[in-house]
Amino acid sequence: MNWTGKRVVVTGGAGFLGSCVVERLRAEGARVCVPRSREFDLREKDATLRLLDRENPQVIFHLAAVVGGIGANQKNPGSFFYDNAIMGIQLMELARRQGVEKFVGIGTICAYPKHTPVPFNEAALWDGYPEETNAPYGLAKKMMLVQSQAYRTQYGFNSIYLLPVNLYGPRDNFDLQTSHVIPALIRKCVEANRKKTGEIVLWGDGTATREFLYVEDAALGIVQAGAHYNSDEPVNLGTGAEISIRDLAAVIAEATGFKGRIVWDTTKPNGQPRRCVDISRAQQAFGFSPGTALEDGIRKTVAWFLQNSREAAQPPRAEVSASL
Image 1: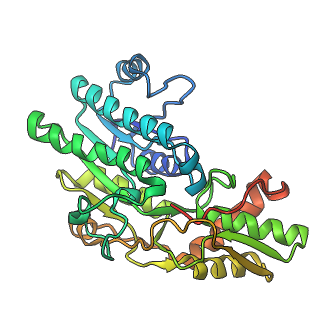
Image 2: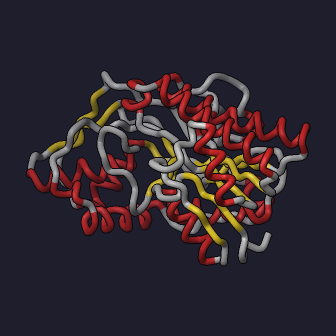
């Protein structure tokens, strides 16, 4: 697909990942619309219809989601399920009726079963129930895969489904009540340095592993898939490398200059025991190859936070959730 002049809607395009996708699409000549929730609440059918009627998109990238760490998922399982499910189901159905040429759905690594063998292969998606603390969110997003495959079979609708691992990078969410583990750890370390507290407290025991993908690499993979991938099979986007939360904390402590003590609160959950994906399908199908090493990406993220975030000068409001 040549993006030049293409009418593209990117839901969630003002967000962390979405803004990077928008930048890349515009650099390739696409005419991109970024709907804002205050004008187009995608949970509401009438608002979604207004968006599609106004923009008449040829391609939709659906990145909008309600997300958070373990704590946020535990507090809001119902709304996390409903909001994410209804946005995806309704948008894809109305896009089909509107004659949209292609729908790129962004899923979540949380859709995988809790005890998936590492590295996660896409064939294992239905081999068990997701990790309990984020299962409602993971299952809501996985319904978009079911819908995508069903619509391709019945209607010939060109919809694809991508599964990015945990993302991080500049412009991430650093609010400790809703952020994921890397931005939360960065903020914790920066605040401890500023207040000279000498220690930070993290959830779990540090043994859980995660895989992290730099946000600009993820945006590249998503746009590549939008241009070149046209199959009903889901596709992982990641690096193929995992790191324990304990080792990750050490990397971030070094990047922020934190030399204090890390205390592990083992009364709090670890989340899914391990996460690391097989990225061979993405490599073979559309040439995806992430280019940012974790240590380099974390240094860039720390630098951005120190230079740009007001939160760097504000006290933390909650403990870190080493999750999603």
